[in-house]
Image 1 (cartoon, rainbow, N blue to C red):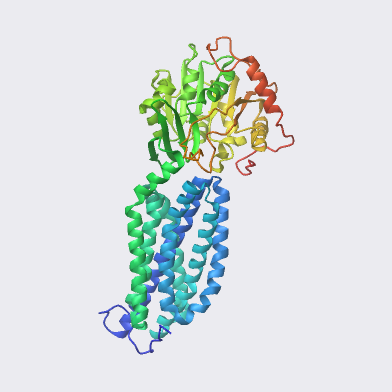
Image 2: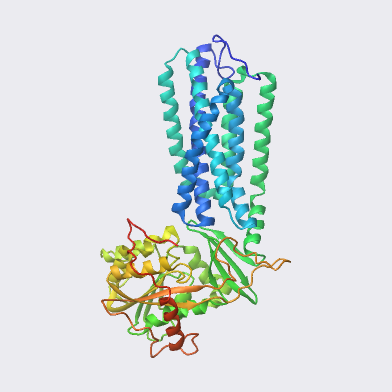
Length: 556
């Protein structure tokens, strides 16, 4: 054995703590502090995995369910395994915390590296969820052994002390859960947050074992723990110093060498690629949202059928890149365009980035365009409640265009809910039209036709159609010719379609055609619209229920 039991009469606590009883009380306090810190760190690891997996893989509900269920299961396994360490609780806890600090601190790096270089991160997510869960689960039995040992030496009520241990654990979880979204993530980012949390975890575990229980350790055990913690802290410090280089290398692996702008906002990661003769690419959270090679097909198909009829006032939900507004402003009799965009950084880039400005034709600088920085759902709800934005006219809109993320993105399902379309209907004139981007009809027909069913439930008549995609968008090709761009997400070179829906209040579906004053030289005409409508109809699924806030129904 490398750990020997301490006699009951031996003093316990930090050096210089005074009397033996004072030292024992101090030792009990430091155990509770360590419990608090370790609980906070453990919850940060969990939230870090959920947040990063949601960003890289998508579908935040699924990722949260996978991470949390696996970790809780693994915590039970860890609690059972900890029984073998209780006879060596001090050294066991010290090594356990060093391993947890290293595993949890490096988990975000490993997940991001798997996404960037291997094209997928789900197996790594599962492995780290299980590993961290086992280590967290083994903490509590060992901590209970340590604090009971302290209580016996101080002749205190062991049951009351165990209750204090659980209280410290729960309060620490609360602090960690609040610190991650409000402090760590906005100030440090995902990778540095995990590394710093690992360092704090290592310091707390090492300090408790070496300072408070140091007299319980043999010299070899003490040297082992010091060496383990020093190596972990050095590793985490080096990784923290190289985080920026790692992010640049991972970004090149995902997007190629054509990255011009990369910024992380409170909403998402924004990356701009291309320019200088190459097609522009706008990526949001790793997914290609705009390709300069074929974006006109999508935006023209989304906008121009909806402009058949009155279109003096147009509302764009999303579309902060200015590309929908560009198409709308091609009609001379458009008097006002309101763009409601959540992320101010998207709007800033649409106004200042030379390539994006060239693509959107300075649409956001047009005097007819008004940009509102707000959540689309909240903005529509405020308008419906009679609390419009300052300067906003209460008059209804002739056209509403929803240029929003795919309904398959869990974070955006409320923007495809019956309640959302009910609010949109209240902002729309009785003879107005609503155009909706509903995700690909061919690859995700259930999701696409669920949007149609939801629109009908909200009082709209619906016309289905799509826009052809599939232009080659050059990625960063290696020597083997493989595309390195946006691995694990929508492949920029893949053939795809944009599923669209044109809706109007009432029971009569709107006519799918172009306005008489439609601009010349469009990439779609009556024949193309008719063909795309037939293409969308071939994917029709009947009997689907509408999606609501309390029962989102979007899936594959």
